[in-house]
Each structure stands twice: as structure tokens, then as C-alpha cells.
Image (cartoon, rainbow, N blue to C red; front, side, top):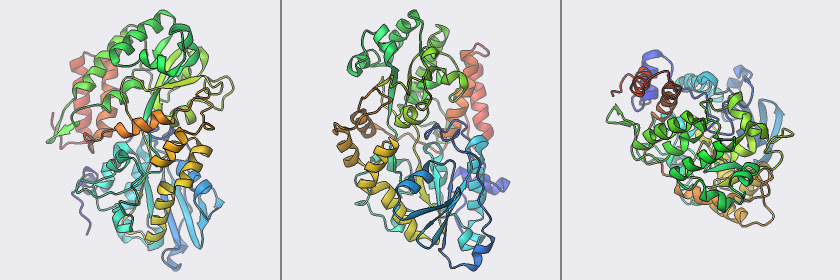
Length: 464
């Protein structure tokens, strides 16, 4: 019998018959606009699979097309059958793709995992994907296998960035997943605006204007005077501040707000009141206006996937399409998103799952292929360091700049020592509540009270 008391996820499952989850409508956040990408795709019933030999069906649960495209394009021997089916040798691959919207992906995953023990072998989940904001919800349970139990060693993963391992390490120190990508962040700035207001679009010189938050805020005043917004929204900077906290959201069962989170509140309120930024939600149409010249937005914060996949690079006339963005380090290092591959306990395809993990996250040649074909930042230090020094590699959307050395340095600095299983709920509810304060609809105290109550409604076991 699996332990059902090791996490909030399973406590909720025991009480309501379904895992509660902590929906993330902006998780795309977390990975190439994950919550927005893809369309609902349901998998054909596996009713006939019980008669087949165990291990002949590999069931993969994910929320968009990204991992499927990586497998389709790069995993040796994968053959596509249709939109939700493929083959690897004599094994049928079945993709169960449910978008993140309204927590649908996690709800679907949770329901299936809870039934895993009683399911026929070929109906069971073999692989499922998680994002950083809710990874601990799954890795701190027995529903995920340790990669060591699959036969993957520390030596196999030696070239991966440490923070990508920390995200999916359980409370007992067991690594419960692997990722093919890293998502260190940068500040992406509009080169034309930089030349007009700062006199240059050179990344080194632009960095001087955004080197720390005080300097960043002074530059925001210059942007406003010239008719530009510093950022599209207060939410653009949130993850930079929240990635640099010195304490966890929850300590000994009590919700606490870190000083750096409150600094974000103070800085953002000042910027908003001065008309130097807005309060648009990430991924909203208003937030996206800055992807185009007429949006008059100087900068956005994000990892490689944001500027490459989420900023309208394929739209004629967009800044990305024109190669009009540049990249600088910004005031603080941070990361945003990423996707981790987990092996579900009970899989009857352990050897194939292991090989997928090894090939897709440690094979240096495949890693380089992903960088070149998909313009992704991959979780392999030698591959990324080689590409950072490759004179033939550059980013079209960044006007020919090669930002990989910047990303490599950033990936080494990510610190997840203050990660907790409550991060998703707290981050979402905090931003939602504080928006009332920014817009003048509540005092700071009232907004904070809204936050505490919203988190406690999701997690009654917490106090504040």
C-alpha cells in the first residue's frame, strides 16, 4: 500500500477522492507558454490492451506538444502513427495530452495515479511530466520512481545543472525525475528603444542601466519620459524577486512573506503609480502588445523559451521577427519554468523509460540537435558551453547575439534551497491579491488578508 500521507497532494486525495492540485493558469509560463499551447487531445481507449503482452504500451501524460515534438524529432527509433500514437520498436506509444488550463492536466494525472495500482499493466501511466511550481507535489510521494531504481547513476547525470536536479529531489534525497532543458532567465530589451533612450543597444552597456533594482527603477523613469513603459506588467518582474528570497513560503505550517517579495510589492507599486508599467496578466492580449513596436514596452523577463517561442517570432512585423530584441543579465539571476520527466511507479516499461531519460537528457549529440533545431537551452553543460563559444551559432530574434554564455552562467547560480510544495498556490494567490492594492481597490493590509485566506482555503492545514 503506498504512503498517502507524505504530501498535501495525497492528503487531499484521501479526503475528496481526487487530488486537489494547485492549478496554474500561467504555467507557461513555466514552459514555452505551456498552459496556452496545444489543444485538448484525448487518447483512444486501451480496452484491448489487457490481452497484449505487458510492456507493449508506453503511456505518457503531458500538457502540451513540446515533449512529444522532442521525442518525435530526436529520440532514436520513434515512429509517428498519428497525433496521439507512435511506436518505438514493438512498443506502442500513447500520448495523453491535457492542457494546464483550470488545473485540468493535474486533475487528470491525479485521478489516474490514484487508480494506478488497480489498472491493467498496459493502461498504467509509464511517464508523466511536471513543472517546477508543483514538482514536489508529486516527487514527495511513492507515485514517482527514483531514477536510481531505474538504473540511472549520478555519473550518468554529472553534466546536468544542479538546480534541475534539486527541483525533483524528494525530502529523503532521492532524485525523482530528469529534464532535457534548463531555463535560466535574462532581461530581453527592445533594441530600438534602447538606442533612442540609452544611446546604445550593446548588451554590456544596457546591462549598466538595469544592473540592480534601484538602477532599473531610475531607468524606468527615463523610459516613461520618452513615452515608453519599462515593462508591460508588474508581473513581469515577479519571478525575478521570488527566485531570490531567503525563506520559504511556509515554515512550520505557517505562511510567511519574504522581504524580497515585499520589495517587489513596494517597487511595483511605485512603478505602477508612476505609469511606468501596467497590471496585465501574463499571456493576456494587453500584456502581449509589447511584442510589437507599437506596444512601446522596453523589456520583458524570461528564459530562452519566452523570446524564442512565446513572443510572436513567426508574426511578420513583431519585434522578434525583426530580430529586434537584445539580452542582458538584468538586476538578479532567476529561472522560469522547465519540464521534468518522471517515471510512474508501477510502470511495466522501466527499461524503455530509462532509455528515454538517458537519451533525451544526457546524450550530448541529441542535446546539441535540440539547441540547433529547437533553439532551446538544454540541460547539458558541455553541450551548452560548446555552443556558447560557437561562432556559427546566434539567435535571430536577438539580432544575431549569442546569449548562451549568459544563460550558462545564470544556470549555475540558481538556488532552490527555499523551494516548497506550496510555491504554486502562494505565488499565484499573492499576485492575484496584491493586484487589488496596486489598482487602488484595497489597502495593503486588505490585500494581504485576501492572500492569506485564499491560500488557507486551498491548504486548510496552514496558519498565518
